[in-house]
Image 1 (tube, rainbow, N blue to C red):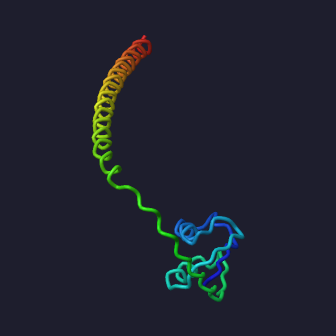
Image 2 (image 1 turned 180 degrees about the vertical axis):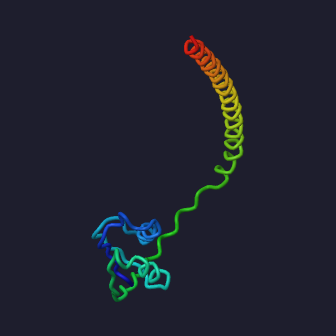
Image 3 (image 1 turned 180 degrees about the horizontal axis):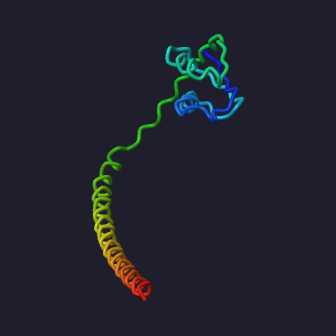
Length: 137
């Protein structure tokens, strides 16, 4: 295992170096993380050696095996399976209704936007022609 500590700020460093710090899980100066000793981690540390310090740590003992949990009581499946198809049909109907409403709303809002844009364009043209007329006088 490697114990990695960020010692310097990434401000003013290359974007790739900042990304490497984030990949290692370092966000603040003084923050320490433990990573498995592998070639990829060693390569990352080599590229940002000026921003971090690290040391090798002996591996921690493996965690104790969890005790097996008691099996859950069986649930009556017959009652549960009868209700599912009805619920699915209701959900499918509700989804199709909601989709139709959303599509109608999108169409209406698009029409409103396009008419507003036309008005704005017309006003802009009128203003431009007026200002030209004033300048020529």
